[in-house]
Length: 72
Image (cartoon, rainbow, N blue to C red; front, side, top):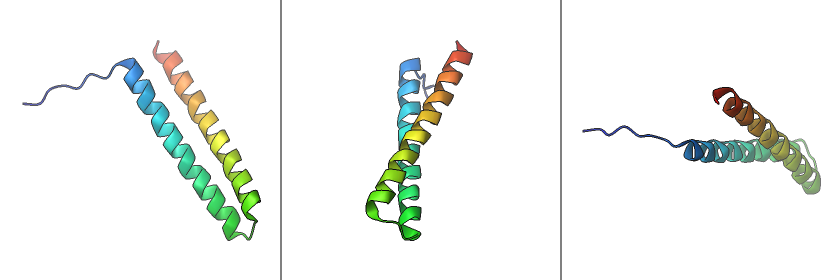
């Protein structure tokens, strides 16, 4: 017997934020790796990784906010 799983809006929002943070961390790691692969210094790589993390997280939060606004 399978019970239906009901997600509360708060739990769904928390899961969406956790997924966006994970996605932002992956993008940041890739940005750091690409800068290092191109021969950049470690401070430059960390700086660009931070910018990539912040930009990706901002865009993810904007998309989540738009989706929440549409569904209400």
